[in-house]
Length: 102
Image 1 (cartoon, rainbow, N blue to C red):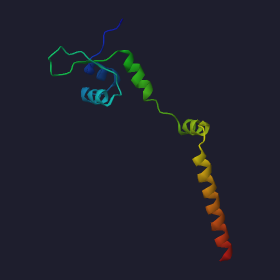
Image 2 (image 1 turned 120 degrees about the horizontal axis):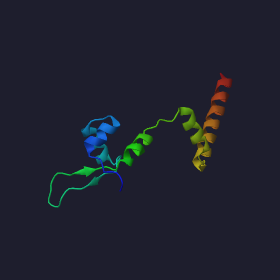
Image 3 (image 1 turned 90 degrees about the vertical axis):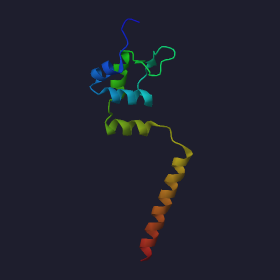
Image 4 (image 1 turned 45 degrees about the vertical axis):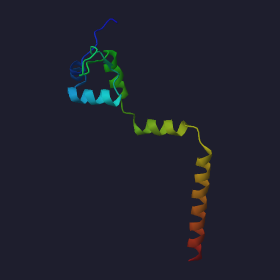
């Protein structure tokens, strides 16, 4: 290890949040941390690798809705998608027929 691990406070300073927010992120599993407390100690002593700052920031990048739509369009289709499309088509046909009778 070339870099010293960061404390939750140091990590919070690096990402621009407070220490309690970092503790919540650790508990939620969004930040990978090690508990380096001594045997018998009751309070956890979390340490976070410095590379985790970059990983966490990259995980927060927001994709444009267009990119998300393109991604979803490339997802494989399931048989259920075809069934739902046929149901929608039949429903539209029934509506068109019922409007023609009026």
